[in-house]
Each structure stands twice: as structure tokens, then as C-alpha cells.
Length: 315
Image 1 (cartoon, helix red, strand yellow):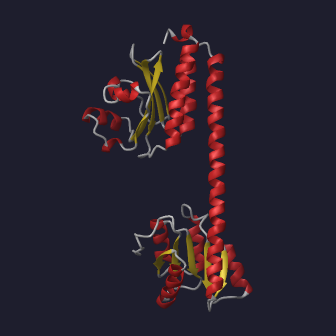
Image 2 (image 1 turned 90 degrees about the vertical axis):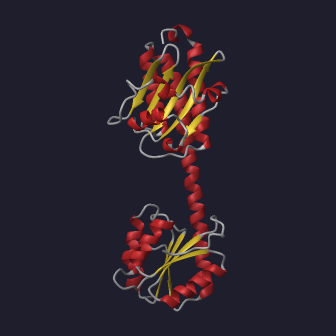
Image 3 (image 1 turned 180 degrees about the vertical axis):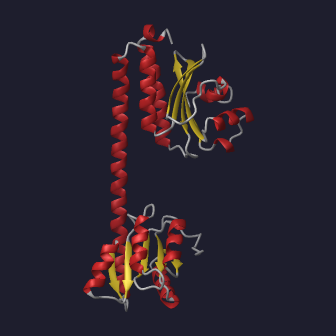
């Protein structure tokens, strides 16, 4: 396993150097570290793939000619790994014929430089490739944020429209929970009414239902009463690491729910119920924006109910 400078900032680009020639790896490592980058190394294609999976570097300097797995094959394999389609790969090789250049780009390399290395050229290529990739990643983040905002606005409109469309309360609630589940990309959303105790849920097929589970272990009313009273969202990233009662943890394990998020529904300054989102596939680090929007959804449901007391008096 490669060693990196742990004292260096994690925001400093990490470069994976792949070359079967130890002296060349050392020269490349020295050159990149002098430019201020963090460096990890691999001596062949197989180790390159292993190190990439482990470290997810920001760039790969890849020798084109190596035994067992050459750089062209290694480049193709890198492109198939998670995130490998985005990472810049700079191939460094003695081959400079047209066929080799075409083969390198066909394999997925981002750029190509020949040996013997012109070190100032290498420095500029690395700098430009990292900068271009950073701009690309920032554009993708901005695009994703825009899509999330559009999805959020659509969900809010859809929730209000459903209130007008459905005269049947059960249909309105279940359709709304389905929309919330799809928006949050979770496997289960539960609406728990406190008095009288009642559940509504939207659950992905193949995942267990909350039906039959103890009410207190679904809403955790007693454990988070103060947070609920203050209108706070409770987010649990890993249920096994909480200090909840063993019985409550056991119930969530039965529900295949390692992570969950809960928001109070408050009507006329009274805790009416709790909206719960269950992420069942793995632990999940809930982001600040997810918590904020989940609280807004709970408030939106509270407003819907307050706007039509007659419709919801039967709930």
C-alpha cells in the first residue's frame, strides 16, 4: 500500500504515479511533490487499479509500456471503475508513433506525453488537466444542485395540488408520502399520528412494512420529545451507533433501517405527529439541505392539514 503525507491538506490534489521503473517513479514523485501535490505510487497495472479503488486520486500519470498489463489496458480498466470516467489520465511513454497515440486515446487517456520527459511541459500539462477537471466537476455539481432544486419545487407544487385533487384523505397522504420517498431516494416514509395512534407509509416493494411494529419505536417520541417540541429534525446516520433503547434498535433492524430522519408535525403549537424517512440500503450521512427540506415537508403537511380541518378531522 502506498503512503501519503497525512499532514498535507486533503484539498491538495492527489496524483497516482504508475510506472514499472522504480527510478522513473522516484523522479516523477519528486517532480510532483515539488509542485505541491500529494503522491501515491504503483509499480504495475494491477496495483494501479487497487490503489485507485483505495485512494480515488485526482489524477493518474500512467506509463504506457509495462509488463503483464500495459498502460493501454490499464487505462481501459480505470475508466470502468467508479469515478474512473472522470479522472484525468496522462499517459507517459517512449512510444510516439501515430498508431500508439491513437491507441492511447482510444483506451481513454486524457492526454499524452513522451519520454524523455520535458519536465516543464509535464508540469504545465498536469496543472492544466487538474484545472480543467476541477471546472468540469464544479459544473456537474452546479447541474446536480439545479436538478435537485427543480425536483424540490416540483414536489412542493405536487403536494399542494394533491390536496386540491383528492377528496379522500388516505389517497392524499399515501400519494404525498410516495412523492417524498422518491424525492429523498429512501426506501420507506412513515407518517405517524400520535393521538389517536395511526400510521401511513410508503415503502419500496421487498422491504418490510411498519405494520405491527410498536408505535414508540417508530416515532421515538419519548427519546426526542424536546427536539420535536422545538421543531427540530432528528437525523440518525447509523442506528447501531446511537444510545437508543435496545428494543427500539431491534425494531429498526427488523425494518432493515440503518439510517433514518424524523421531523415533527406541529399544529396549533401541539405535536400532532412525526414524519419519518427510512434509508434501508446502508448508513447515510444526512446533509444539512436534506434536513432543512425534510423539516419544510413536515411543515407543509402541517399547513395542509390546518387549511382544511374538516377534511383532516377524520384522520
